[in-house]
Image 1 (cartoon, rainbow, N blue to C red):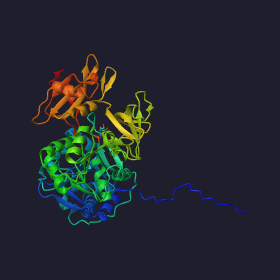
Image 2 (cartoon, helix red, strand yellow):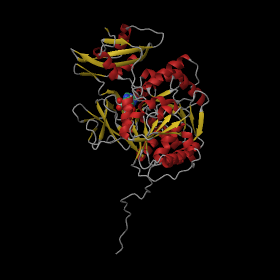
Image 3 (cartoon, rainbow, N blue to C red):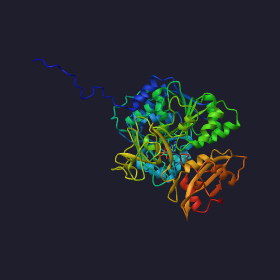
Image 4 (tube, protein in one colour):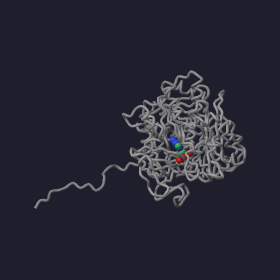
Amino acid sequence: MVHATTLKIMRSTMMDLPLQVSRILEHGATVHGGSTVVSWTGGEPRRLPYAQVGAQAAQLAHALRHDLGVTGDQRIGTFMWNNAEHLVAYLAVPSMGAVLHTLNIRLFPEQLAYVANHAEDRVIIVDSTLVPLLAKVLPQMSTVEHVVLVGGADPAPLMAAGPHLSVHHWDDLLRGKPTRYDWPEVDESDAAALCYTSGTTGNPKGVAYSHRSIWLHSMQVCMREAFGLGPQSTALVIVPMFHAMAWGLPYAAFMSGASLVMPDRFLQAEPIAAMIATERPTLAGAVPTIWTDLLSYLDRNEVDTSTLKEAIVGGSACPPALMHAFSERHGVEIIHAWGMTEMSPLGSVSRPPIGVAGQEAWDYRYTQGRIPAGVAARIIGPDGQPAPADGEAVGELEVRGPWVTSRYVGDDEPDAEKFRDGWLRTGDVGTLSPDGYLTLTDRAKDVIKSGGEWISSVELENALMAHPAVLEACVVGVPDDRWGERPLATVVLKEGVSATVTELWDFLAGRAARWQLPERWSFIEAVPKTSVGKFDKKEVRARYAAGAIDVVLV
Ligand code: AMP
């Protein structure tokens, strides 16, 4: 008897080619060899085609391997601004099998030494302009043996750090090295890059990204649903490469052929405006404080922003007033995005659904955005149970996915405060809508708990920042005998304008519930910022507790 045969497919027969950073490097350097990275210098910008970036990456890998003896997964720290050499290091270090550790130059010296020692960095690549800063902490970085100096600064301050250190010049190291490297095959789950959180409490914690997570994340970043990168794009990367991998833009650009504009140390509004006018980026990414400064500059100066169609804003909540101002006065659409160092960092991007217009579209754009397929998200209610994604139930957001970390570097077990049953506890509080949009109301630790009710500090800030005289507003909870906590509003006024507390209180009264309105007000010179440019609410609370803030009561 003849049996009919059925084709039974138990396993896929797809090839198992590992997802390696070296494939991003080779692809960008060949297929997109003509795309360029521009580094701002304050004078003539430096332009490097991706073919040359690829050649330099091979040379750097040869130098690290053969001159400095880097093997295995040794950590190579970078102490650099956003520029072409940093991009070369981003690509070369993981491709050769080592681990790139981006050091946040704005951390306190003790924290910097802590992260370099914790990661056991063996080599540090430093920009000339950052030599004085590094020289101060280098003696405390006990595992560093080599420093590679980019640019022409005097290496003496680095050499003074200790006799065990050798200092090399980038150009000397790379000169004459082969422009091709036989990149090793690595396991795609091996670490490729390392970034420490910029948490304001306790020591920073390390997050190790794998080759695989970088690949999948980069593909997501390129999607139209996210930043929509392609050969037609030029991305101005203002978000530092030492913070959350510059939101994945450098790898995504190399993968997609998008050109890059790198501001180096020129992060003030005037040079940023000049970069936009002359380098003609189509997209830019930065935290809200940078956009706030740029907006005041653009309002006062004639600048051609016509190519800049979209500005990605994330890192902290983007005030709706900022979105409207850019769109209505300068033709730039602000795309709100949310993420975390622990998430590579992309979590969500706020593009309204197709076909939605008018105020409804704006309402979508105010949200933190839509969660992509690669990220699973849930809201955990106050009872510790998952709450419905109905746009109403408020709770802590938890996430999981292939580019979300499952534990911090060096921890044997996931830290119970940050992880629960395989989910990352984001510490962010908000809602999820049935169509996947995330709206954050606050950080769990910044929510103001007043008489058993919660007040969102972010909502009060957003409402205040819509006042024409207000440049920045930072609201924090402060102890109150009767209510437990009440909001304190600290306000920075725009240059040359005035407003009274009563006026601001009246303005807020039209936009927030009466019981939420702050009784305590203060006009301040500037809001203190963290190492990555966010409002430092811990510092504001500490200044208030120390009596260092002049408070007006209403
Ligand atoms: P970091 O790891 O330094 O990038 O910080 C991540 C945290 O920044 C998140 O957990 C949020 O609290 C905050 N954050 C990032 N993007 C946004 C956003 N668009 N709106 C509100 N908070 C944000």
